[in-house]
Length: 346
Image (tube, rainbow, N blue to C red; front, side, top):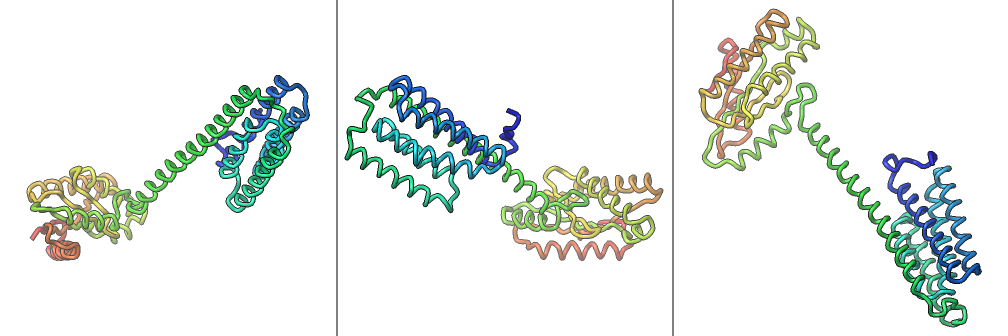
């Protein structure tokens, strides 16, 4: 059976075709055996056998050529428009469940653009079979012994619908999980700076807006950081090292702040840190740790001491994002005017 496609590597329509083909083979094989057991080799038994052969051939055709939808239509035509009406004329109500299964199969297996036409034809064929059997009751061959045939019909119908719906549900759940994963990855990509792998300005704006909306009496600090003489670093050591500096600062800062704090790349060589506190000693201690580790990195790499300047702004629920950014930027500019390598908080 190496020619069979692996289910995990196939789309839903191919999986449905395989289920339909297997169900068609099992139901016809069961009907063929039941007919032989109850009525011997009759014309209806021959119909079951011929239908089984056509379903098998359609199954092979679909798998080998890849035209599974054509093969699906072939199978449904044989089962719903030829075999079921003929069997109904002979065996009556014991086979009517197959007609209902045929309508369900059309809804599941047939493409929307063909569904109405296909279902209408099946409906007309079924109604015609009902009328003919009513007009010619002598066609009935069941002779009142319908228990085994009814049981076989119900079992086949039950498992046919069960397997098909189970496959559809499993595929839907798999697609939903995949879409959820892709959505999370996309959201992470949209909100993350690709170079430093920390949050970007877009996320910072959203986070700060939500934080302001949820604040009560507490206060926090926003610190805007600018890496000193970063253009000179790029010009002297190249942009590859410049990118390494940006990534190292982001890593150092992220590891030095608290789990409730946030660091984001503000733009270029600027970063913003949102501290979940208004404790000035605590903030200065964390910023000092960042400064020390940042300088250690540059000393180890190039034998120089890289520094940064920062401006801080305290904010509460009455603050606006524009006010926070403006205040922090003004104090950052003041730090630069005063010789850099410092943080201005007021």
